[in-house]
Image (cartoon, rainbow, N blue to C red; front, side):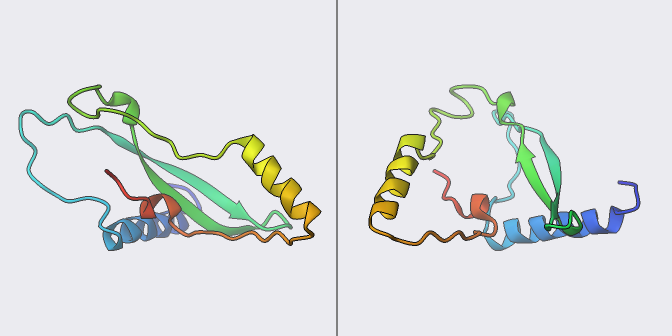
Length: 116
């Protein structure tokens, strides 16, 4: 990696790998001839504040899931996402009852999701 922010990006990579290790994201083992390992890539993002100054350098290790083969690599897929209509209903209900909305950030949210 090169560039003026090289150290910031390397720190972000180390932080992501440390989170993965702390959360036991993977188990190292020897590959067999039946295994079909998939490649991965790093995705980088600069988080900015209201003045468009960089506040944080973030990195995420992403598997190339599109290389997986149905059968040997996986049996089914599932993406737990909410519907827009559900969100609209929640906002309407909350507005009618004068509830307040708050937002929060879950650090390493994807790493905390259980794998099956």
